[in-house]
Length: 163
Image 1 (spheres, rainbow, N blue to C red):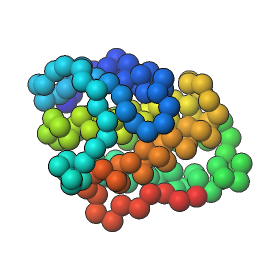
Image 2 (image 1 turned 90 degrees about the horizontal axis):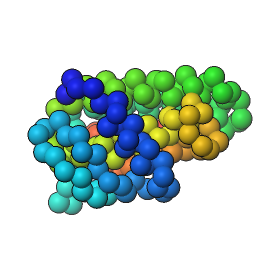
Image 3 (image 1 turned 90 degrees about the vertical axis):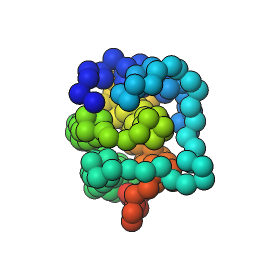
Image 4 (image 1 turned 45 degrees about the horizontal axis):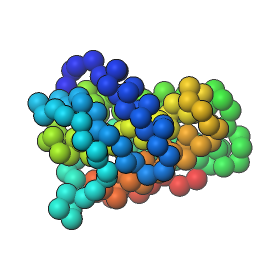
């Protein structure tokens, strides 16, 4: 998927930031597997089972989770400055970009994953100060997205970052 995804993902993030709470939003028109059309999507299991993942996605999500694990203790102690939030958000965005660029998931799994990605990106935007809200709230949003990822996607030994 080596297309320019900035515009479709930005639109998706914008839609997500308008909808508080768990990920439930209109799916983006972009689909790198050839299927098109906007449909309302909500995170759900794949016929009662978690969605498959690939090694690149698992590594990217591990990296995001580890960055959060290192940051959360400082965030909770209120020792995390604006520049720290920006650095964390940059890491999250880089890891998301890597996962998207190397995505090899089937169309249905990809659609579910984009709901998680949208939440991660929305949280990162808040941490960067580009979207309304306290930077701390952006970190909370990212942590919730990581929790949802573990609930809906196969990732052996997944444990969400604790702070």
